[in-house]
Amino acid sequence: MNLSDEYYSLKQKYRKLFQKSTQEIEAKLEQGLSVEQLEKSYKQKWQAELSKVANNRVKNHCTGCGVCCRFAVSEFSPEKLKQKAENGDNFAYQFIKTFIPYESIEKAKKVFPQYIKMLEEQGEKDYYIYHCPKVTEDNRCPDYENRPQICRDFPDNPVGFLPKTCGFTPWKLQSESVLLKLNAEREIINFYLKELNKS
Ligand code: SF4
Ligand code: SF4
Image (cartoon, rainbow, N blue to C red; front, top):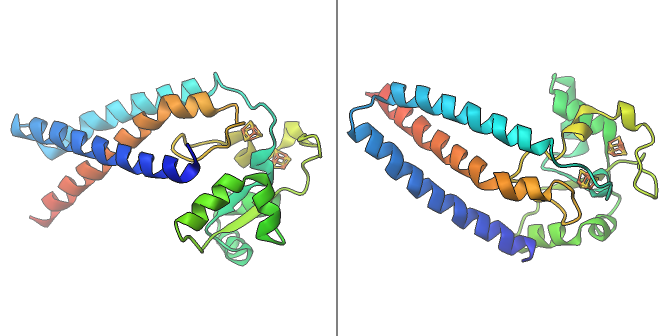
């Protein structure tokens, strides 16, 4: 499956999970639970699920393919990232300290062509591709023990797209639906809370 197909199948999966979660939540509300009680019990459930996802992540390991060192996508330009970092955004600070932008999209394409193809097929134009100038030709980090937290944390989200070579792929496959359902439930409960505040 190419990444565009993966993207559409992810959207479909989310839609189905959203419908399922809506039915589950509505059934609980019909049983007489208040939105606040529901939120409380779901928060506990989410916490437990997130811990499980985090525990499963540590059972997977980086295989050293080097793609995440050579291919980091951001919706922000270097200038915008710099500005965000100056305003206290720690992620932007680490990102800009670690990565530099590619001189051309062609160079980035060589690293993860499927990703760029997907962005092009979706008509996406507002993105920037970065790479770390420190990674060695044999995909080593020259200062691995002291690598930045954003490098240690990658991948931090099982819903994101990973190269097939990534050692965290089993974790992604195992955890993706859990995270999608959790996001759907959050969205639905937030909707009900908003409605409640209006009345
Ligand atoms: S600092 Fe090391 S781990 Fe992080 S992107 Fe660069 S080479 Fe990779
Ligand atoms: S993409 Fe995955 S396997 Fe490859 S270097 Fe990054 S974390 Fe390691």
